[in-house]
Image (tube, rainbow, N blue to C red; front, side, top):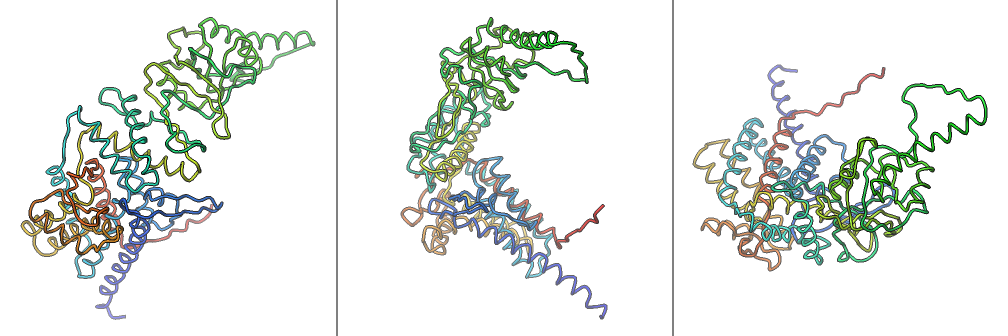
Length: 520
């Protein structure tokens, strides 16, 4: 082989590696892009057991499919990060990442080096974050709830539960107002419990906790009103010694005395609770038979093997303190609720704690006619909780319908022309073209001519009509601000940042090497 051919071969190999990686990213984008927007289509996912999921949620689609390729996994991570941090915008983030890589491939084919592209993409991303501030609408705290409702309406457009969106949004906002503590909103304190049966509009907000547990003994009452609740991080049972111990028993009488002693220790623990006025007990550990019968005779509900996370949520709901030592607690440790009941929901028994005075942990009971409907309703509610909490915390929103992307693309092209030349200018303009893919796909999914729509939007944004976006209902363009199509600002900023990051990571990779480690 001639020496002068080696650099050319290396160059060709590197391009091949990028081409393969970008092709994988495009496949992932193609999986979700038809779901974008109110007119997006749903996917049916079938697992190995034959169970089906019907959804148009990008994060759910990518989580459910089995992706082995490392580049594909990077794209899935984009969706996961977007969902975890913002709660919505997962499809947008994946589409932008895919489009940035497709544009990068075109530039690589024109001999633009990947490092120039990723450096330019970083500059474009920084400029976008600045530009978004110019079109962000900021509201005072007194106006945020109304705006959060409008953002939630946009989020639910095109979802299976769209017909019930007013009910869902009302329940979510009520939940967030209930758990809010000053400026802090911890959405993990909104518990979602799904039960088949009844229609979606029968979903309820419970100012308390529902858990998939049942009372420890059938003779315990199924209803306690004016409940005084003890939360135990230990069991009502005889505690075995932590170290190895040996007990010598010489006759049946001594054995009976030992058993009686165990029973008395457990009864003494129960007596302490009874004297405090406790009529409901939740324990993270066991409640043995002696304790079960003793509590039942005293008309006390006992619930055992409660997850510690559920005990913490109960604590926030009922205002009680978790008890770790029975000997050092008093009435101030107890929580209160109007009633505690054991009842049957769908096919299972649950313990319901409701009517708490000022709960900082609440439950949304989600109903639906089928498992698929309930699952999709839950995903929609999780999206709404995320965006509503964000708007109520920050008060910052932007217009949707592709208006923001068109504004960014239009101004990014100007920024590139004024500040850069040559390959850097081409790369930043490629970033702008990737942003235009969002309104283009919105139009495409609605059955419109995407080229005409983009041309019309470019003309409007040239005339400084910065809120013009895609009207998927009337198949044209409109002012997204006037028509109240909004998103949280963080949804867009994070989507652009995530897409840029994953594009940069993929562009830095010039080979994928499988490593087989020797067995020991």
